[in-house]
Image 1 (cartoon, rainbow, N blue to C red):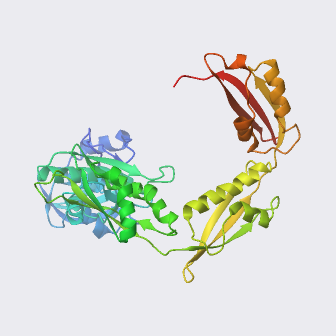
Image 2 (spheres, rainbow, N blue to C red):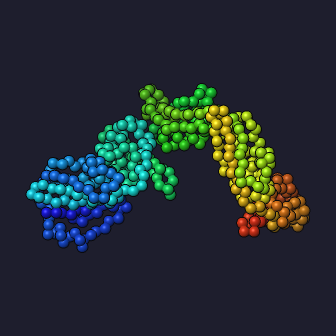
Image 3 (cartoon, rainbow, N blue to C red):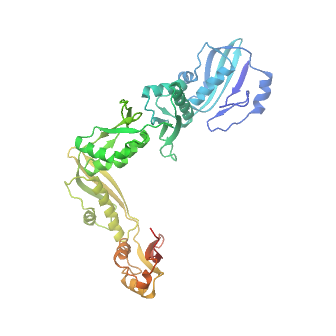
Length: 452
């Protein structure tokens, strides 16, 4: 006798259940119900003699059997198979799952019909589970998902959350496990982050493993904002990357990088930071680099000597990353002064570790050159309007200098006494760029200055 039994998370119909990771349930009543009514499952237990699979491509039968919790020779019934199917669903291995079984006497052969979850698995991050070792956390998940090896598909996150919550309950700890995907969701999740909410874990101290003494003092100074903040790996690491990397870049360590933070519970029971953690952030300082040269490509409006003059970097000087950043902006501003408002630079450092020098390959997309169109003044007196127009040097048709407006507002605006008045007046500016005609309109408007 053969019985078809489809399965669904939290099923509502004993004989017509289908499990979909999308959460959409389709009931195939026209195929299943009449047959099931005629062939009801046998009462009592059956001896499991064989487990079969259809649809397996990425996973072996042995791996899936381990994830199901079933064993050849054990006594089973329908509830037992439902539990096994639930475990397989929670494993995150499958997008769709159903099963059927056939019996000969008291022997049963079970067949799982599967559609595997597609897409690469992403790393699982235990954000602030500071009370457990990595082995304890992974072991707890394997009790729920035997195939777990540190990564998971999106559909496995429910099972992982369940396993971690059970671990907290087993240790009689407060807190609620929460899940958050991390990364560019438009391109697929890059990490699965699990954290414990509702429990305070303040940071007591921060240490930078691998940092020299002269650098660590500055790192600690810039990290004071972390002290007493609740620890989360997902916060500390980007904090270090964003706020502390510039310390190294300014000193020529252009390839310095911070690793994954670790946290250890404060062991001093008399500490003011009881219940908190001491955090260690690994750092690789890397070599100290000097400036080699710039290698230009794509430029025609400005010559290499003009670009070098704008860059203002000299061979052999310290490769100060912050100075280099400003130098590249200066090159774009130089293009803007020549009317190339959309010029973009793509810079790629090329490191020469033997000489501890760095060259920059700078590709330039100059774009079109823009010209001045109209100057419009609104709200000014007639005398002020006449005076401002006489001082404005960019006439229609001239190459538009992107730096000119700022300088004009700084030096050229003088209001009549009647325009100052009360409340005080100020001048706002607006530029409109026509990307079809490659022209720029400039508007200056007299407005009331809002109170502080």
